[in-house]
Every structure is written in structure tokens, then in C-alpha cells.
Image (cartoon, rainbow, N blue to C red; front, side, top):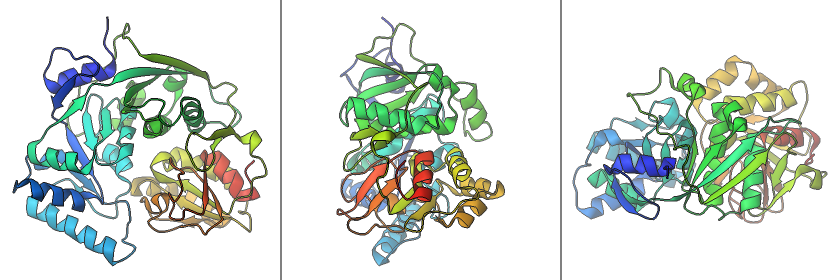
Length: 412
């Protein structure tokens, strides 16, 4: 019987001939990523009693969750991280003017097919869009990797999610992943290695594939893998820091579950408050008033997403009762969007353009809603308090749906 992607890559990274689901293996990740939580990780690291990190080149730190710092607490946190970086001589440090970690790592060449990347953020699954095994770990685990260069993982069972057809009627990758999560549930793929496949995936851009991998964790998945192809190679050309060997599942690999989706007639989807799996087609929510709209984040803050939003907003004004926030995922994307004139379109429409970072998504700063307000966002989570106020409601949707709501003042 053939092997899945997860089984093959974890065998390779643990130095074993083969592994099976539920087996515990010790692996050496190619990179371990952290962000503003690096200060807390450094305290864990110091408590171990090790004075210097095992491999400085293995560690990547990106400040992104509250940039620039919103108050003295965040400022002190950043200062502690900078001091640790300097003391340890860490070469892969990206300060506040770079972007969101999940966009920065691929841009800076740390992500590639066949890589094993662990990160102290649940949406580390994003790098699966490039054919990597990437997943989130806790702060204690990250500190242990800093100290030893390795950690253990349990080999997951695998699900195959097949996406067929072509998107129509302004639906997109965000709509199909919301549909999948709505069907399977927020814990429907708990600790499973999800492999996305099918002609619908083959047709997707890298930007779209990153949405699927990013939100794999929202159904509990350990990873969200997409088979690398010519699109992957083209995107990575001139970025990747080292040679790589892609890892592919065997054609006769055995999966615990296989599900299939045809997107030819997929209606646009919306995740309603207060869970990401409370998903309904947009037709059931038409007329729902919104107060704030957010387009961006690590889920939908890429150039493709901003282009879609600009197409909707061009020549129009946002509704008088709506605040529209634009949040590019990185400064590279910000610059490219500006060169294309997208920022002019957003400004002319009445939007507020924010610096790249995570701020409003987690409620750190830049866009906390008031009590009773409804927010429609392209982000990945909508639990109570996610954007900084437990008495606000968050709806999750695609850039097209969010931009349309910003103009009309309602979901439609």
C-alpha cells in the first residue's frame, strides 16, 4: 500500500525508512518560526537552563501581531525580543516593517516543497500551499526546538479533499474552504493531514492555495498540503534559499476519508457568528447590516485579493455607515498594489489603508469594533472577542463579498 504525503515526509525528516499513522517520531525541522510571542518563548528557553540556541539559522522571528506597538506593554515585548535576537546572534529577524509572518516566510525564501516548518502560531499550516509539512506548535515546544534543534511529532492520519471544476458567479477559494469547514465542522479533521487535490486545485493561483492551507487548521487539521507544480516553482524562483526535493503522495496511498467538492455552481459562503463552521450561503444572509469591513490578513491579504476588492470598489464609494479597512499581508504586496493603482482606488472609495500586520484580526489595535456592531471580514476566525470586543459580531467571507458589503452596507 502506498504512502500519504505526511507519512513520506515525516519518514524522511526522522531518518526512517517508513512510518505509520500514530507513530511518534523525532524530527529536525528546517525552520522554526515565531512572532511577537518570541519574548515568552525566550523566557521558556532560559528556564530550560541552556545558554545559547542550538542552531541560530533554524530560527525565524517576525514581529507582526501588534506593529507598531499599540502601548508600552507591546513596546517592551518587542524590545525584549530585539535584545534576545542580538544576544543570540539570530540572523533571520524581521522587525515591524516587513509584514505578517505567514506571508513573509515564503517571500523571504524559507518555504519550499519538502520542507518541514514548525511555528508558534496555528496558521503555520499556510506553507502547505507550497508542498511543505508545516504546522503550529506551542511556546514550550518552540523553546525546546531552540534548545535542541528537534522535537517529536505523531504521524497523522490523512484526509483527501478533492476540488473539481472552475469558480463562477464571483465565488473563490475562500468560499470553498468555508463550505468545507461548514460541512466537516471545526473539529472535523482534528489532527489529520489534509491533502487538497483535483483539477480545481490545479487551476488555482498560489494566492488561492494559501487560503486553503491557512484555514486547514480551522477544521482542526495538522497540515493542509497542496502538491507543488509549475505554478509553485514559478512563484518560488529567485526566493528559495536552498535546493529542495518535493515530496508527493503515492498514487495508491490510503486515506482515512475522501471528500469531493464541485465548485462549478458553488454559491458564495459566509461564516456567521460565533464559530467558523457556522456557514451559510450568502443568499440566506442578504440584507444583514454591517458596520465595519476588513479586507486583508494572512488569509486574504495578498495581491489577488486586493485586486478583487479593487474591481468591486473602483469608481464607487463605501456606504456612509460602513468603515472599510484594507490590510495588506506584507510590504511587498503593499508596494505591488500601490504600483498597480489599487491603493488609489481604495482611498478614493473611502477606505482606510493599514500597515501590514495582524492588528485588527486579533483585536490588538487598528479597528476594534464597538459593542453591538457587525463586522464582515476576510480573516479566518470569528469567535467572541476575536477582534477585541466580545459584544461585537464577526462574519467571515471572501474579498468580493466583503467589498460588496462595504459599498451597500449589507451582506448581499
